[in-house]
Length: 106
Image 1 (cartoon, rainbow, N blue to C red):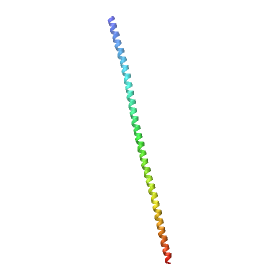
Image 2 (cartoon, rainbow, N blue to C red):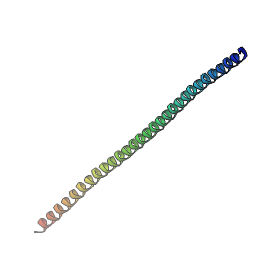
Image 3 (tube, rainbow, N blue to C red):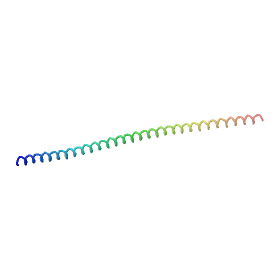
Image 4 (cartoon, one colour):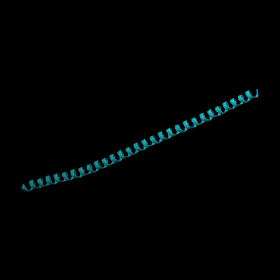
């Protein structure tokens, strides 16, 4: 009877140890999964941040290029305006000389 009782106690002890091990294993798996999920989220966040920074740099470069193009257009427009004024002045002087020559003939 005592042998059966000891065997039952040992079996019960083994069952309890097995249950504690399974609880520990489940807790460790849950920790590992949570850690992996946090790592995935962190990596995804870092990738997203890199994409945002790249898009920001791209936008800044585009804006800088457009600003340079606008400055070039503005300089070209100013140069064209100066050339047009010079041409108008030449034409006016030529007209004045022509009128002066007509007056001198008369």
